Length: 605
Image (cartoon, rainbow, N blue to C red):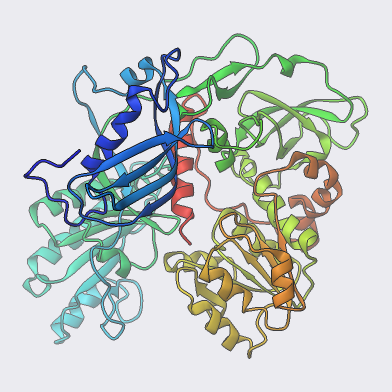
C-alpha cells in the first residue's frame, strides 16, 4: 500500500491513512473473524506498540492472530523489508450492524448546543517579576473609584484588573448587573484603560459541567451583559466563573472561562447527541448493561432479587443517591476483572432490617457499600453502612464511602499512622487524597501534600500550609520537603504516581518508613525495595478495586473509621470529598461518560 502523491508523510511516524489502510485487511476475515459470526470486529485497545522508523510512503503489512484471544498482531515494514512499526496485540471488539448504523451520520438535520470543554494555556504566564493584576476590593484599590483616583494621580494603567462581581440577593435583584453596567461604561469612556483587560469574576453564575447549579441568577445576568460588551469591544473584557488566580487563565486566550476543581473550561459549539431517558421495567430494577463493552448498552434491568426476604444481618434502603465510581465505567466497558455489578456505593433511607439487626432502624439516613445500588432500592450487610453525618446531602454521602474507606485502610491497616509522624499524600485534592488529608490530620500527623498548582488553593482550604504544599507535576517536591524537614523526610508516603515520581517519593524516606502504593501503573516489588533500602516497608492497597470480602472482614475498622466515629472523636464535622455533581438517574450515559473523562484528567498528576 502507498500514499497518494500529494500526501506528505513528513512529521508522522506512520501516516494515519497508511495505518488505517493496513488495518482494513482485518475485514477480510482471514485473521480476525469467523465466517459464521456476522459481527464486525473493530480495533479497541493497543498494547506493545513500537515505532522503528518514520516517514515511509509505501508499506507492507502482516496481520496474524495474537495469543491473547480476540486480537491480532501487526508487523509493518517498508518496501525493502526494514521494520517500520510493530504491534504486539490489537484487541478487537465485536460491533453489530445495528450499532454501526446508530453511530452513522444523522439524517434529521444538524443540531448544535453549547458545551464546556477543558482548555490549555495558549502561551506562558508573565514572568514572576512582572506586576500582577490589580484586584478591586484588595490592597490599595478597595473599589473602582480608588482605581480611577489612582489613574488621576498619575499612576500607570495596569495590564489587568480583576473585578469580583458582588453577589446577588433574593428575588428580582438587578444589583450585580447594574454594578457591572456602570463599571463597563466608565471603563470604555476612559482612554487610559484602552490597553487594560478587565476580568469580571463571578461565582455560581453558569452551569459549565454536569450537575452544576446556577446558584446566583443575578450574577448569571452579568454574563449576558458582558457577552454583549465583548462582541462590541473584542479583547477588552474577560468573564471568569470560579477560580482564585486569574493569571494562568489569561494565557488561555479565552474570553469566557469557568473553573471547576482547578480545571478551566471554555464554551464550545458542539453537535447535539441524543441521551434518551431509559425506560424502567415493571417491578424493581437497577442500572446495568445489556451487553458489556460500550456505554450505549446501559439499560434499566429487572432486579427481582430485591423483593426476596432479607437474610440475617441485612438491611434494605430506598436509594436517594448512588455514587459513580470509575469502577462502574470499567464494568460497563467490560474492562473490569471478574464479574461485577454497577453501583458500589450509595446513600438513602432504611426501609427494612432483618430481625437480628438492632443497631439500625427504619427511617434512618445511611450511606455505605452495596452491590447494584443504582436503582430505587438496594440491600447490603448492616456492617457496611453508617449514619449520614449531619448537614450532608444524600449526594455528598453517596460519594464518600469508598474514598474514606480507602484512606482509612491505608492509614490504619497498611500502616498505623501515629501522632507527630510526617506523611506525604500525593494527588491530595482527589477523592482519596482529600479523605486521607482529613484522616491524617485527625490522627495527629503532620501532613505534606502535592497537587497541580491550580489546586493549591483547595489544599490551603484543607488546612495544609504553603511550606507543606508541592507540585505533583515536577520533581521539585523531593528537595522542597527534604529541606523543610532538615533532611529527615517523611515517615509515611501515600503514593499514586509513577516512574521517576515514585523514585523521588521513595527517597523521601531516608530514615526508613512506610511507602503505601495506591496506584496501579508502577507497582514496585516490595522485596526488592526492602533489600535495597533496609528499614523501608512498601505496601500495596487493593482497595482501589473494592474487595467486598475485605469489607466484611474489616467491619470493625469501618466502625472505627466511619464518618460518624471520626466526627464524634474530633468534635467537628468531617468534610465530604470534593465537590459532588448531581446527575439524573434515568440518563446515565452522560454520567458514565463524564466519569470516564474525569478519570482521564485525574490520571495526570
